[in-house]
Image (cartoon, one colour):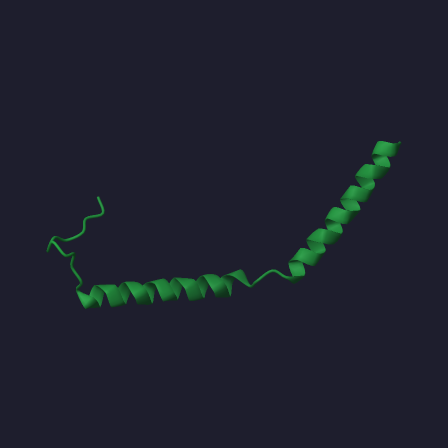
Length: 62
């Protein structure tokens, strides 16, 4: 019986904590969109700059 009470109290507290955590959650879609567009902007700036390595060789990814 003691185990059942402990489990019920734990489940109740876990539900309270989940509810509190949802209040502080950031809007993920806006943040992801801003980060994504920032990465696109940085990539375009790098592509426009035409920067090469100091050896004059192009960087290869594969």
